[in-house]
Image (cartoon, rainbow, N blue to C red; front, side, top):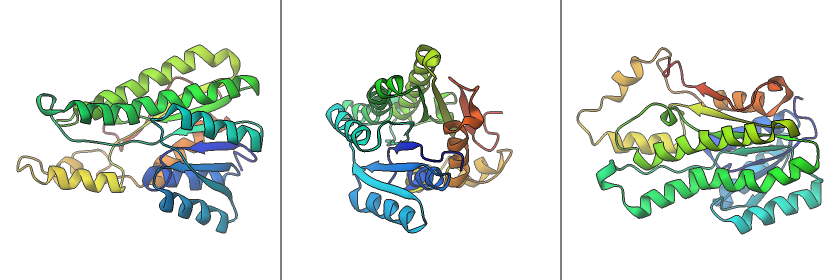
Length: 253
């Protein structure tokens, strides 16, 4: 019970990595606020956690919207007293090379992936300051440090996540607020299968051959990333802040 009685908000938690993170945090004793814009799926995740003996509720949150962030955090504080853990997981991906990335695609991806992380941190930091600290875990990507064709807006957004994480960590470390980022590579989620459909259109791209070249030659499962999230959210990582923690099968190595 590494997170017993901690209050945790998880964004993008209706499916994929976010749903897995919510389940694992609840499994370690946290009271989890499952947030997303996919209402039916998000409610189902919260119900599943409760049926398994954990504590969870679903709250709708568009991470791009500052007013919604203020409302959700304010409500959580009113009901539970504080926010101990924030997992900024919500993310989207569009595929376009630099010369073909539209203003709309750029804004959509960056407002969600980078803007959502920034707005989430901005909303919870004052609460954490008032209540003795907390931990923030942001979902970055190996693509924040390693390039791939066609991911212009996505790569930029994930690099921004690293910058936000480091800034938060260095600014608030004296107030017992830690911030770290996880950097997954290939994770078996709905987003990953959408990526496969996109790259299958390119004759030059052989996914199986690319995967075989990695030290651990398979896609990761969401729970493998969730275990790192639990580590970073808990006191097991009490001396870690401002870090980037790969969950990438050795890809960056």
